[in-house]
Amino acid sequence: MAVMITAFPPDYGEAWNRRQVGDALLIGRTRYGLIGADGGEHPEDAETTAGFFLSRSIFDEEELLLFAVAPQYRRRGLGDSLLTRFIAQARAAGMARLFLEMREGNPAGNLYSKHGFQPIGIRPGYYRSTSGERIAAISQELRL
Image (tube, one colour):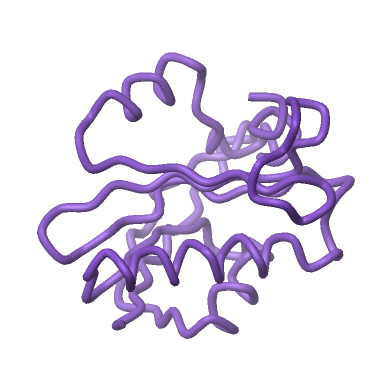
């Protein structure tokens, strides 16, 4: 939750609360991954956790629900490593397609593009900023 609080700008309401995360983890076929500040898969404690992903799958498709790296750990390749691991694990589990949605203008879009995600749709006005501005959600897909 510490990464969640710092990684998602509060202006867009993208962060989940503890209950939403807990409920998602109770659903079958939901998985998560962590990355430590040192790039390891198993951070020793919350203070050394630099990022995470949360996803769910059905049949041969998986959706990346949340993906975050705390601001103080960005630009170190940790997001790249975490996304690489997410994709590799999905492929090993027999997934054929991966999906995600992101706020238009989200800088993470560059990382997703680098890994082969392609835009497949737009949800106009999906996000609303605290100032009332409506921002589109970009749906993306990666075929494995």
